Length: 305
Image (cartoon, rainbow, N blue to C red; front, side):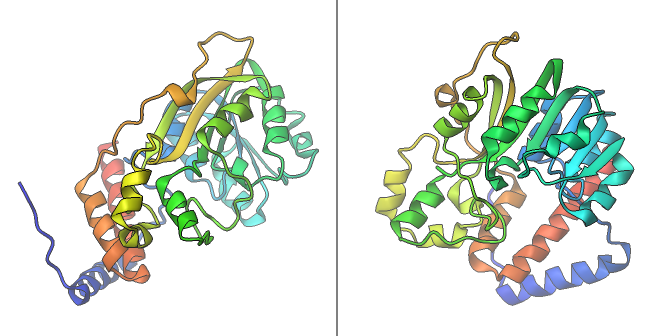
């Protein structure tokens, strides 16, 4: 059944404002959009349950909380931000404040023993020497341990479109987050792990079509000829790559990322609405819709537990 969207911008503003006002007294602090196919959801699933986990760069604990409460994992965290460290404390066995860009960051966990899983969700791209950090992560694994990492993919079609327009502009979030200092294509991700003696044994692509990214407005202005050319890249819709890796000597068949198929994005009704709002709504209105949507997903998830 087709549903046409025919709502004026003013009416959208009124709807979103009234909804937010109605919820203001009962607003929950949500950290994470549950029930989605995001990189964080995939990381949680791959890690599994009842594991001893070292989480690097967890921020305010969006994944940490779920690891502890939903997956019954024992979590140790290393985080640079002092405020975030305080938020992490209720969900961790131990939490340490340290800078992953320092060569001795691992000293803070020297008495914690080895780990079943070490994870870094969208962290390595913020580091000066991701290779060195990954090498240290490998050394902290126990005999059957694994590393679970997610990384943004700089080869997404929207980034190519930006380059063709000679406009590589950083933003607050997303693929060109202004705090990113390292960028990875599919082959670069593969090489990163191979260079430290790790093999990828499981991988998943987080797929986002260009109009479903933070660059939707720019993509809408991109010529059809450019869009057609970029569509020939089979990895052009890959937004993030989530991998599980183990030392080369361990069991498991090594995966070549370039050999994997990219499944189309599974769009929900909310995804279609968000795509519309990204192009036609103000940034403020879109952020309000995101807040409402995230809160509703969180409440639905909790109601099903």
